[in-house]
Amino acid sequence: MPAPAAPLALSAAADLLVIASRAVLPGGEAAAAIEIREGRITGIHNPSGPLPAATQTVHLPDDQVLLPGLVDSHVHGNEPGRTHWEGLETLSAAAAAGGITTLADMPLNCIPATVTADAVQAKRQSCPHPAVDIAMWGGAVGGRLEDIPELLAAGVWGLKAFMVDSGVVEFPALLDDDGLILAIAATAQAGVPLLVHAEDAEEAARAPQAIATNSYAALLASRPVACEVKAIERLAGLMEGIPGAHVHVVHVTSAEGVAAIAAAQSAGLQMTGESCPHYLLLHAGLLPDADPTVKCFPPIRELRHQDALWAGLLDGTLQLIASDHSPAPWPLKNTGDLSTAWGGIASIQLSLPVAWTAASRRGIPLAQLVHWMSAAPADLIGLPQKGRIEVGADADLVAFAPDAHVTVRGAELLHRHPQTPYEGRRLRGVVRQTWLRGARVDASAPHGRWLMRGATGASPGDAAAPPATSANPLGAPTA
Image (cartoon, rainbow, N blue to C red; front, side, top):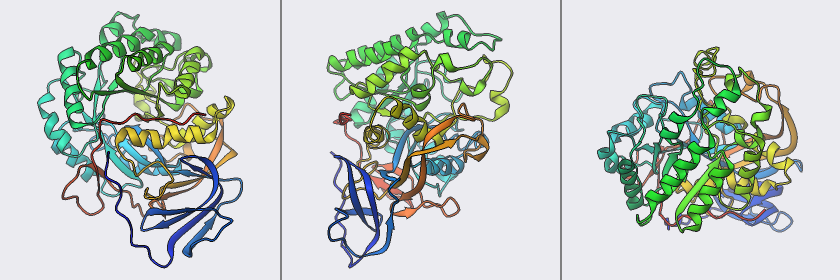
């Protein structure tokens, strides 16, 4: 397991004391006073008892709940190279506004793609001072598998692969079993996960093609459930016999996909999975034709699949919720043709209210939702100091008003392009404040860091964290 954080030499007064009538702690909700020194949580106290002296004390109003800073393990920052699509500065500012204090950036849509050690350095240099902490995934791509050992040594937290065309030429898919086996074995040896976009290319090619159409039904038919199921079953077969293999299926969308992951888990394989806020709130019956803001792959499916995704989260088959924030300039999305529009949902700032709107309708407690969006993704990445309010953890905190409502106006969002499928929708829950390592996040004076796996000789502002281990069950509390 990762080494515990070194103890702090306690000064006479804490730097900050945050007092809340409701706080989401690892054991559930409770009133708490959170004591913070040098950016870390050094005490959790009963607010009605004796409290330590503090240089600054913040009392949250009773309508606000103190949450751990959320962790989003699946975002596309697109920098360097396609900064006009998003950029890490705007991405991290939008994340902080949405209560997300740690991101894990995907290796594609940037140029160069994060598939070499040099590309890792290029990404770090492209945004030296993000608003929140950022980790990186590397890429396992066709034609560059020989670069994996050096890439893993450069500080990425695992690898990402596609089993179908990624949409960008810089990130070719791993279509053959030999390439996937090599990537699974390399990540297993390093004790990190292999994240996979699990849609089978052959199944996608056999499906009816959506060409020159604005029909959402045609778009949905072009990526049938069979694409997801076959890919997951292939992965499970390839994992067998590889000690320590951990495959994480990103953006699961279907009931049958959840069942395929459950079958792999029942066979003793360490296969984990995630879903995304847009799959958990929206469904195909709600989506109009000719709206490019709702296009993504795998597509948003019918209500029965959404029900199965929630059931998979509740029974532990799926471990977490991540945004898959994937923006693009409006002209690339608004082509007048769903078949050519860029696919991707850009709404990272809304992840928590979207997910809470959907979860609360189903009677799911806030503490359970927060686990799926904080500790669980932190555990996937390998960051035990993130995503939880406990002594020794980073003092990443969020003041959240769960019963407030907001009507979405894209022009008010902080990510680079304002288009969103939630335009005009009334969502439940508003983020009031965000702290990163005990300091309020201020986009005009950012203090985020790059989190590098097993980093040595880190430059100022970089955080060296211990390597992840393969013993990572991502356990979730029951609702």
